[in-house]
Length: 147
Image 1 (cartoon, rainbow, N blue to C red):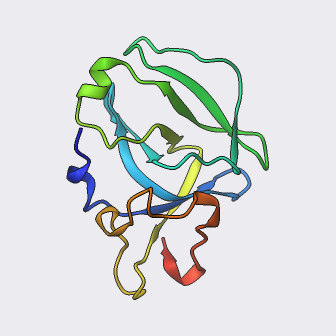
Image 2: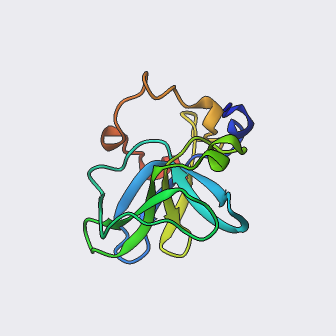
Image 3: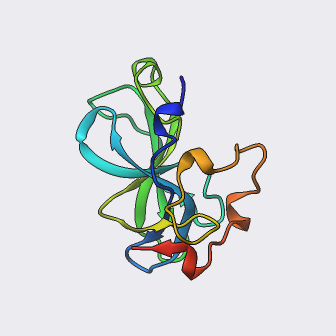
């Protein structure tokens, strides 16, 4: 699956709406593959130090993906889910390759700016994951984010 279709999407900072805690700095606005009317945010880097798993794995009626809810470590509220095992139809459909999802009603987001501080930071301008540092070490300044 090629993620080149998503290179012009804005990179967002994702915060917990309940406690305003930073959840990730590599967010992307997305839609649910099983129901494209549902908007959410996703990331390609596991947000290890900001969320943790709650409850057991489950599947939905719309597909066979195995999902597990994630909650904000600071306040404990469920903010999204992790796709533990994607089903074949979802893997074969047009997707961004992200397996960490944030519910749009549980998070607030800020579009990040590029190094010049003048333009929106786009996914195509981010370094590849193996070349970039861990999510935890990325901490954009206030000037790097806009609403």
